[in-house]
Picture (spheres, helix red, strand yellow):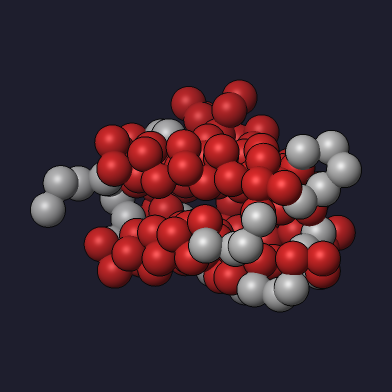
Length: 146
């Protein structure tokens, strides 16, 4: 742990924390990538593989349950932040291809959740579905072409 900087510690919290801890970490990660990217770019780039790997694990953990057990509010917020991260070319270009493939596989598998777009009382499923599609497009735009 002592080797992790602040961003690394938040990514670790996202990956291994409880739901409340994951939300706290997402709030900080969102703030870093939307408002403080200039001052934190070096750390974000250094942690890019860890970030995307953690996102793929959380994606699996959160959505790999029966649709009625998925925490929709968290899922909606989480996938919106994933979309923002994947929209930043400087981050995505640094990520190893194997890690990106794991994330893409998780995203594609989530699109197969039966009636995902119909989940939630406030169209959360529809928002999640749209953001997953957008995230896949952002990955295609922003990763190193191979």
